[in-house]
Amino acid sequence: MPGRHLYEQAVPLPTVHAALLLATARRTLRSSHLMPLQPIRALHYFLPVSEEVMHHPPRPGYVDHLAGKRKPLAGQKAAPRGERLTLGTSVSRYERLNASIEGLRSRSMAVATG
Image (cartoon, rainbow, N blue to C red; front, side, top):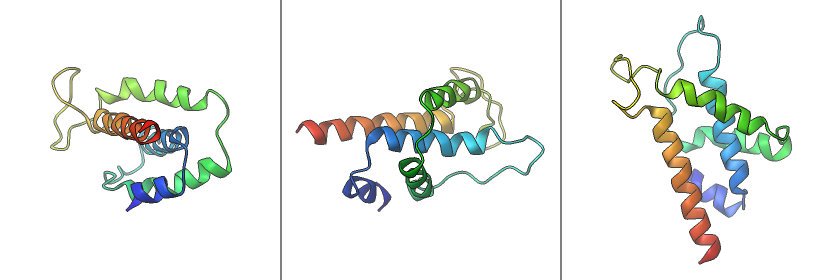
């Protein structure tokens, strides 16, 4: 289980957060003329990126930069059935991923303090 692996390896939450942002940014900010990639279906996808971030941390401020670039895209990406999203009408996969990140952060903080 990837989440357990990250926990047992004591991967810091900022590293996990950076890996999630970096991996999703690589997919969403790629050239539009390339074939679309399949959706990410498991946390396992992010494990190599978390290793990369641990061994080669991004420059200070780069993760915040990626988060800022991702926000405008969240409401513009196509829904799974090809429908166009408008802000406030549907929850995009990026918003769900962000909610997952926040949930992971909350659970990690609860484990660390409890």
